[in-house]
Length: 317
Image (spheres, one colour):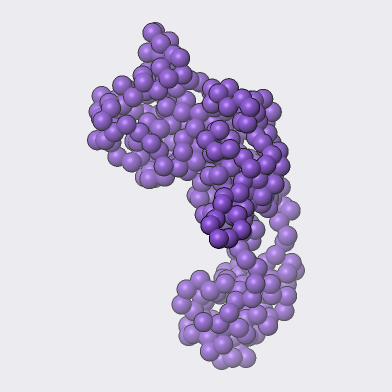
């Protein structure tokens, strides 16, 4: 098992209040060769879990094993076994790219011709050939991300943990870095977090979704789509503002309503509900002009929203 999370809990002390439960007794495993997307809204516990996995933070309860090593008792072996790109990529801006990668490799005990060859391989892999003799401080954010990815790979670890690895990349760079991650994933285990759903759909077969410190979904992307609760989601747009938006909660089978913008609403109803027909009837009864009506597909984004959005009736504003 490349990554094994067992009953992991992390509490943060808060003066004058009960501790914040950032991660709440979660368990999951990542097999060798898997590329797994680790998803969740801000504050869900993603980065905390990753920091514990890299032996940067201690767990309150439970533990994580990386490549068979326990983060509590074998933290040095854990660090040797993985490459880590944190969300806020820390780099020495006054160092040259090639110089920095030599420095990073030396920290892992590489030297001589082995280190020189490894640096050359990383520069080629992440596309830094034209930037290697520049100072890191002169690089765009996208190229700094590439440098961070190269340092995470320099010692050829079996496990990679990437926290928002494509932050700040333009569309062309996104395509290139995704290809790098695919290439890496043929030989290594990759756990990465992102807010870009298209990225997960392009790279991952498996997804783990965490919300409020608890895992709310873990499975193959195809299975998640098939076993989603079957709810129907429709986006409706009216020409005029609703006098009483709460009337939408009276539609048959409705579960919750979300206001998306002026006169636009997202409605979620029970499986097999004839939601579009009900909205047409409502518009006719209330003398409303319906200018847009679209049923959402069972996309990863839709599944994510259903699992991480508070399911309570919308209050009229």
